[in-house]
Length: 205
Image (cartoon, rainbow, N blue to C red; front, side, top):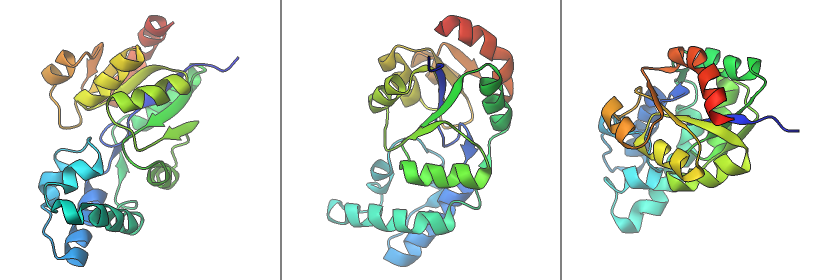
């Protein structure tokens, strides 16, 4: 029997991707000639790339900008990215409990996999290019009994998949916003996750 899994969002949940994403946006500005305020962009990570780029590029140029950004991403965004505090211990705790680890993210799966490889963080599966309710299908398909994220949309995903949502306040959303969005538990960051895991396992079973 396949053991259940804990699903994790990636950006600002498992990894601080802000330095790398900012670098990719600076390069996008240089290549396209269209200014992107990278600090503003990285302050609101979570929604799909097109949502952010629509703030800077007109509709006729949006898809080309998405393509260009993704071409630049691997060369500029992977190396500067670091793990969030407690991320490795959180993943280790899930494995020690006999559960699987699944990353469900709005980032393209192949780019998330590049990050995970660079960071040396092994996971059992990656599902990418998903947001809010769209993540629920992957959570269900991969047998995730808990979903951990930093954005109100991650709590929407957990509610839609009918699993407990665990929020960390390391992203753009406040503890109050995450609670209102349906978080069963709100943590300051993943350093608090291992101690909370046994209760989550009981809640999810």
